[in-house]
Image (cartoon, rainbow, N blue to C red):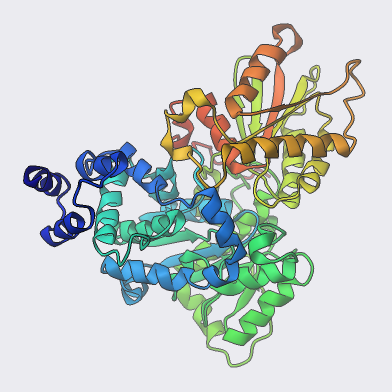
Length: 550
């Protein structure tokens, strides 16, 4: 017994006091197999071990259901609990205020793209950047990026254990550990402080007011992207209620930028918040209003919807680089909100930053031998509308029209009928509905995509619900074809792709155009199978810059 005790302590570098506490609690005779793996086998440079341990912080489906019933009670504890765990790592909020310069972004649609534009612009201005986002597409290390690149597996594992072990040491009880997203948020602060980044771009997870990232007290600038209905069970069932939560990241005297075409009275809610806390609120101009000469507008992300995200990113980046420009407005005694932000002269780092922005899984095209995959993680009615516009334009060809295939899933409390309605314009020949489960043959290959928050049965049932919604809404087949539209519900992503490959690929008919949408988790699963080496995650954009010609 003493030998096992000593070996475990040496292997994991635990403090003697903590090891003694573990010994008293478990006596090792009561430890199950999972505990033995945790305390005896994991090495601190082991990425797979880190991911598996991180997954243990996910709430399982039954626990999550109980939490939903108590959502208001639990939500208000997110920020103070995040602060508590940060303090256990020696990271005070004062330290964050003093050592990190932060851009904080909330919104319903486009916040990830806006953050990606911001990061790229500021990196091209010569700054060392940190970028925290969620969810990840394939590997969890994507969530924390330094200078535009995800942490390497070695870096992720090292930082993970440097955060996990101390938090585990100071547990007050067996449940006293941060949940998955909260842990990743804490780890992001830890990484950015240790890497000494010159700017940290934080994307809000859900909402804003009660989001873990809202421990940020003094950002340099705040952004709020397009608003809409999403996560209604957590944030409310009107855009005004959702705007209230998104506005929760606004801070006194800190400039906030947003887009002008907000739905309903949501812009009024933002203006009220700005007046209440005395912070300037700006509406960004259209992208083509900036002074582009001698350059042309070129974005690394496809789709017209990215224009507003790019404009928001330009304003956020300029406010970050030139905070004194905004300080005069912030000191005014009287505020009239919102104020229209002025367009400005675009310089080469801005142009390069926008053109070379990469954000996989959003308006992304993957060309294969017999099929072209159009993947977009749209998951709100408005973003699906934008996805449809992009798909119809990107797939347009003067040649014979290929067969069109839809692969779709949606999750959570989202209404499938609302999301599916815009897709009927695409006139799909085949509609495939599947879960976000990759497939039994691939589940062991990547723990990064494991989701314990819903059961497999729930996910499979949801694909059938989505299929039924498609059929119930009378989406008819493409009138140019003699055969009727094929509609199938399949249990996994791998079976959906096998169906496309085995049943639909026809070398003599010009291939297929396959649209994958409805869920970022679905998109990530599809990309993990189309590109097993995940090369697209690390490929830098090399778009050339064009000068205007008279």
